Image 1 (spheres, rainbow, N blue to C red):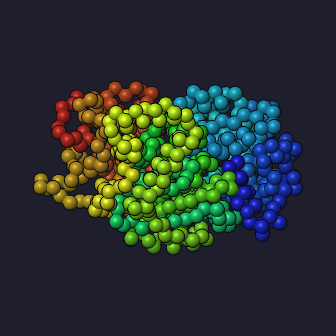
Image 2 (cartoon, one colour; image 1 turned 180 degrees about the vertical axis):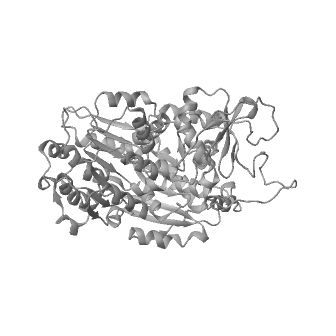
Amino acid sequence: MTEQNTAQNTEKNNTAENNALVSFKTLGLPENLLSALTEIGFSSATDIQAKTIPPLLAGKDVLGEAQTGTGKTAAFGLPALAAIDTSIKKPQLMVLAPTRELAMQVAEAIESFGKNIKGLRVATLYGGQSYGPQFQQLERGAQVVVGTPGRLMDHLRRKSLKLDSLSYCVLDEADEMLNMGFLEDIQWILDHLPESTQMALFSATMPPAIRKIANKFLTDPEHIKIEAVKKAKANIQQFAWKVSGINKMTALERIAEVVDYDAMIIFVRTRNDTVDVAEKLERAGYPALALNGDMNQAQRERCIDQMKSGKSSILVATDVVARGLDIPRISLVINYDLPGDNEAYVHRIGRTGRAGREGTSISFVRPREMYSLRHYERLTSGKVEMYQLPNIQEIGKIRIERTRNEIAEIAANKDISAMREIVAKMSEESEVELIDLAAALLLQKQLKQPLQPKEDPKPRRDSRERNDRNERGNRDGRRDNRRDARGESKGHRGSEGRGERTRKPKVARNDVDWQTYRLEVGKDHGARPGDIVGAIANEISLDSSYIGQINLHEKHSFVQLPKGMPDDSFKRLKGVRVRRQPLAISASEAQAPTQRPARRERSQRHN
């Protein structure tokens, strides 16, 4: 729904495009859908909708190349809804999405499109949420199912999701699902579809693996390619600040103070960075929320609701969890860390400028990253201008002006007669001039944030920046194999192979009775500590503070978890996949690396 608004309003701003707009009434949709579209303010179809709806209504498979912001949800949702029979209380439309947020957004849009279809039920199935509510949605006879691959597989195995009446199946953001390691899961799910199921596959790019899926599961598809990046991003001003003179955190604080924004989203590289940056902003007087994969679903939904309602205005997030976020209030996007690929940049800045509004993006770019700007300009068909960060003199002028306006507004709109009498009496009794008394009060008021800031400190790279080179090396699979004085790899204290201590628990070791478990996934599979933390935390809703040290080996890993894990949680973790590899968790006699050797009872390994 929101993608439709974004693309539609952007097109309305382009006079040359207006004559090409296609009315939904000409596409063959039933009246109950047309009336719903009118009620929610849709009048004309976007390019992807105009080209996709007719072949889907005609029963053809569709292979669509289209990026976020082109209106894909309506393109596949409307024709599928047109064919749903609500007297059948079984899934007839299933949509696969890469993230929970996108799944929720798609489900919300389909519900709005089908608001005038009596008896229509939509179920949203994703990890991180308890199974109970999802079982209820399916038992009540949901005709539409939207979900992430892992949770859809779980329901199919449990037989709580049955696809014998499925008429439509849609893969949304297929390339992103591929990047997240869902390729085998997708193929497994598609193998369970009835042969008569009509297919639609949408992807921003068409790598060989996606084409292979299309060739195997789509029958003579209509290939529709939409070039929409320029139109979708035309209302976003793009800036880049070359990191120099001061560190990125100081720059971020200045932007938060001087830039006029309704709401802001800050993109960082890792989950830990979301918390680190949010806490630093909080200490500087700018309340911020962190959104990351370590949070359970209730926390994530509460965070997004606070942003939508206006209770909070700054969100710090990673790429994956922000994928599909729809918060129209966001008028400013900060790329605190540049994304790992150029396509992610488009998705990031697309979080602003929503629903036809104007938006701004500012990217923090180190000198060695300046070449990226050319790629961004080419990809968005736009211009990335250099951003001039305010200096301390400009900051001082802004603070003085803001304080003056605040005080003048109080004097003009509040009854201050009692305060005048008190100040006059203070001046008389203390024999202090009124202007000196006012200056003293102003001095006291500005103690926390001085009206005239001190000179900038000498630039000092924070720990995140000092470790930046190592982080990039880790992503490329390159490890620091320097030896310590005892000839061991740094951080290695394990007994099986050349392990690597890659994560320390957040809680004091003495506060938790740890049990070591073996996981059948390791560095050869591309696994990283963050992947393991996210998989465990999301599946069994375990706070990441209670996930201890992780020791990665080539083909397996060790992780410390609180002793006495419930059998149900243990069984659920066995089937969880990291980098397409089942965890196959089992209790282990080997220990993950510790700061000090600890005596622990040895548990028998579960087969």
